[in-house]
Image: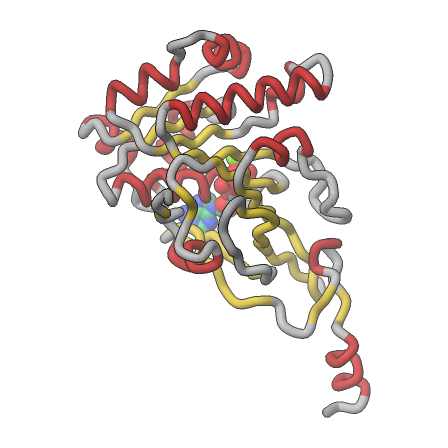
Length: 253
Ligand SMILES: Nc1ncnc2c1ncn2[C@@H]1O[C@H](COP(=O)(O)OP(=O)(O)O)[C@@H](O)[C@H]1O
Ligand SMILES: [Mg+2]
């Protein structure tokens, strides 16, 4: 039986019935600005605090920006790197994909170098643009997930969703097939205000909370809050009041 490890976010660990399995791979899906990179960084920091070094592969951010974003949460990535607890790799999806095809590529190399236990790849969405078709995309995602597992790492992969609101059925299916856990981050509009909501869609081999929970990005990182009470249809992005809530409002109960 595999051990479970922390996601770096206490409340999320509870929702996952004590974190994620070691050597499992979790996809974090969400539109731009929902906090995917922050979730991922917090997962890496959660590991570092437990003596589990981590690797961050970033396709998107300029190095300076990532260090600056981390420092806004008081995470000193430069210090972690100096101490050999963190390795940050800024590369292109093309180079990374070529590395995946090698027997001992980048992931193997860096895992050995710092004794890594965790990896964040941010975001994997680019592989979709590189792929000729869904079949070859699935092969790339498979190689990625197998590479992570072969190295004994626990992985978080971020996946950028194009749609900000509306239907949540647009999750990358090819990715969904190969990962163990799927987390969805969403914008939700309620009474002229935008909230962010999180739900766990899949956990392979483990139970999970099925609630849709509010969360916020605070100076301390991600904070998961209560469920949205009295609302339904949250995953559509524009929830309605529940029937009971509508009745109560109508009769001012
Ligand atoms: N220190 C901080 N305190 C509060 N919010 C922050 C902080 N740093 C970043 N944010 C917020 O986090 C959001 C971006 O999160 P990010 O993880 O980059 O999202 P994504 O990767 O999904 O695009 C922005 O809306 C920004 O305002
Ligand atoms: Mg990001």
